[in-house]
Length: 333
Image (cartoon, rainbow, N blue to C red; front, top):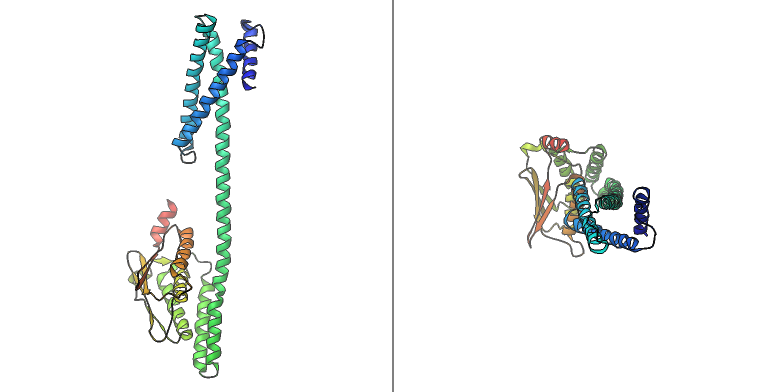
């Protein structure tokens, strides 16, 4: 059908100038149909070959130039060979300059239309991919917002603290008061920093020490935190609550017993924190899976990776820190 349309257009051109064609259904029409089929196959082959060699989303301009130039040059060569064979071998003519120029013009125009269709399809596909990625990002953000609300409430810590208060309320009111004070400091810190993107490492360290004190009320002083003073504590920053979130996950995934203290050691090293603890994983919880889930959220927000390595005795978690100057440079880039 498309070949017939081209044949009619060419026929109108020659009827107006040289009146070469006298009828519609003849060998010239069949020649145009075959040539159109061959040119479409060549265009399809080139587009498939270019799509395998180049990624459209990576270099759109380069992709368009290569495909368009190769398609036009191939069709020009194909039309020249076809016209030469047809006029010299079938019609017996040696002069066909006018016919060649007309055929070349129409088939080059047809090639441009074909490529416009291909490029519009590829661009639409890229737009759909971008929209799908945006929808996935929005969905993740909503999930993280819900998770953030859950973290603000943190029912496990709240209920465990309430139970400890009930246990000590009638036996040791001072301890019950200390638990309430520690619990209020934990939630006050969360409320004060819920809208802060980064805070100084020293502030997070103080909040973590208060959190460990609260856990010690709950677990009968079974947890020991070794977190020495960091000289760079005011220079380096961390996302609020993330260090606490990691420590809470570590405590939740491991066996805490007053028989043998559970030691959590945190040290500063090369613009990051190294958290180490003894491997006492509970039977029904995988600490590695829980930490990797947190690491995925961390990478989503910061484009930086947390790492967890462990053997039969020690678990090591690497937590990236942020330097204000470096963070600003990354934003500018």
